[in-house]
Length: 255
Image 1 (cartoon, rainbow, N blue to C red):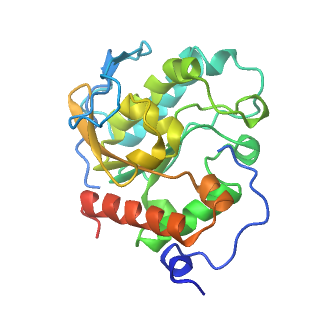
Image 2 (image 1 turned 90 degrees about the vertical axis):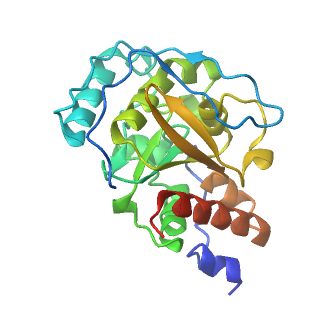
């Protein structure tokens, strides 16, 4: 068995790629206006710019994280300008995992299996993500997993920038409520949205940048999407992902 198989906890490859891809303080108020700004500039990136935010009622400082996420999910179901107008989905996949997680993973959108089950990352790419998480000493139950877009795009296509602009602020609100110590961006779409950049994932992975959401800042570690790893199943790609995840765990203090 190749060493990087062991490092990623992978001994076999699922046959098909069907997916489209803490110690936390009590949740702060969800920002009325939300923006991201890399603290360290990345060569080739665009200047940070404000992101549109939904009209979210502030979350009480006395409200625990679980209750805050439940209320945020309810507000999203009522108010998201993208998801409430979509007709191509069966389920709204808001997020899944430990609301007190120190490590949060962010993908782009639900795929067919996620749409069917209502949970993020449950198809072949999700199976690999579970093994990737376990390879660095974490468990799926101990992290939080979400997406920029909460409903499945038509024909599993990549979400458009306009869709990310409309639905993305709800992800930012999730991050602000959960307050993880690090966010792992899975693939190009969440990386470009969170870091406000046009630079490709190949150049950005291996580095971390800090973003700011209201009064909360958090490091973002970009890495390849599990679906890409399944398509490009080489020792080099697998080792790169493992190194990225080890970096994220080190930042989170979970190692």
